[in-house]
Amino acid sequence: MASFTEIVNGDKPVLIDFHADWCGPCKVLSPIIQEVAKELDGKVRVIKIDVDKNPALADKFQIRGVPTLMLFKDGKSVWRQSGVLQKGEIIKQLASFA
Image (cartoon, rainbow, N blue to C red):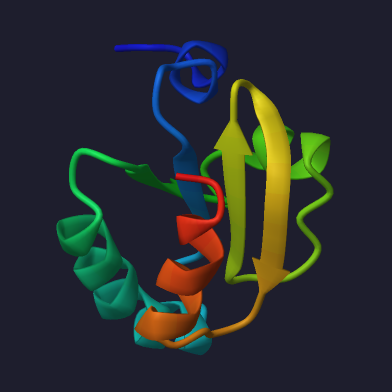
């Protein structure tokens, strides 16, 4: 399994959905993220990270609320947004980086 650093330094932008099982808004965002992943397949890699199972990573990126989306390009964080966003809004944001 690739490390976090290997994933975000890959050849494609990486959208990370920081979430938690107990989080209501995360459950609302999850199917939206799945649709985004399907629509941008091949252009953007989408991964989900559970903050309760990965506290060191959540702490490293100062994730204080979930859901939080972060986009990495060439290993650097280029966009970040907390809360539930609609599919079109997420795709519009990602389009400027993909």
